Amino acid sequence: MRAFWSYNKEIARQLYNCKDDDYLKYISITNLVKCNNAMGDEGRNPDGSATDKTTHTMKNNCMNILQVFWREVSILKPKNIVIYSHYHYDNFLDNIPIIQITKEKTSKQYKRKNGKKEIYWWDREGVLRGSSVRILRTSHPERQKKDDFVKKIIDWIRE
Image (cartoon, rainbow, N blue to C red):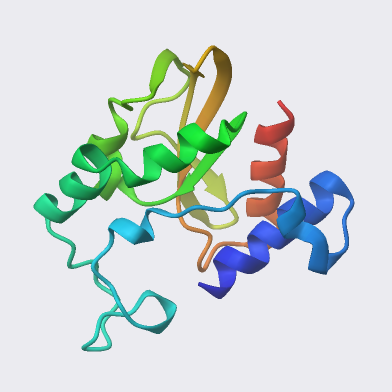
């Protein structure tokens, strides 16, 4: 989780030229982790493992039936949504109940180089309550080359 916070802080700091302690004034953070079964510190399971043991039924109840994440997005009305996730939630991101997808810029399987690794880069555009919105599902920043990852996200937001 440290990468999540430090990478977001650096993205906001560079985008908005803000002080380290002020970055949360410029961005909203929500997380699919609320749909995850991990309960402990740093996203760990009670047994200490980091494997996502969330069942399909749990994800479906959170994402589709209760629409917890989408209700937050509907209230916030963002221009850009960046989701750090693996492909395990893609079937819940295919048909977004509150966003009409108008353009698939890349496929779910598309990857970009980030240092010596590759990151997923599913880039789409849509309409949320009459306003344009862009959605990027990319890999979690953990164990990613920070400078390259941060630059890629910033460049995407500035596009």
